[in-house]
Amino acid sequence: MTTLRFTQWVANAACGGVDRDLFFPETDDAEAVAPAKAICAGCPVREPCRAHALDHPAELGIWGGMTESERTRERLRLRPGHAA
Image 1 (cartoon, rainbow, N blue to C red):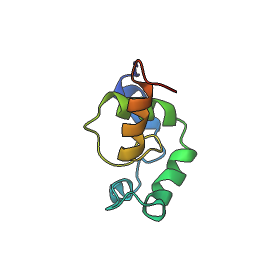
Image 2 (tube, helix red, strand yellow):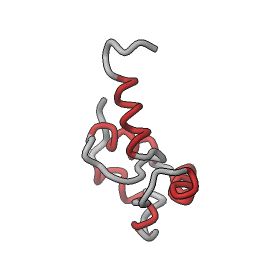
Image 3 (cartoon, rainbow, N blue to C red):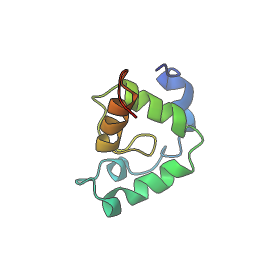
């Protein structure tokens, strides 16, 4: 998976200027992540943000509308040889 350079899309992210803590909730439950996911849902650069986070497994928090556990599942699903 390839991504645009971070600086090519991050300036257009809907989360710019938003309290960063919103994207790093203490739990992964739906209520805790809903505010960040709502911002991501309308973000014009959600896809490159998501691709960046999938390419960089050390990324913590909500990226591209996905939690850490959702990204882990997606990486496993995209792994070559994974049974659909």
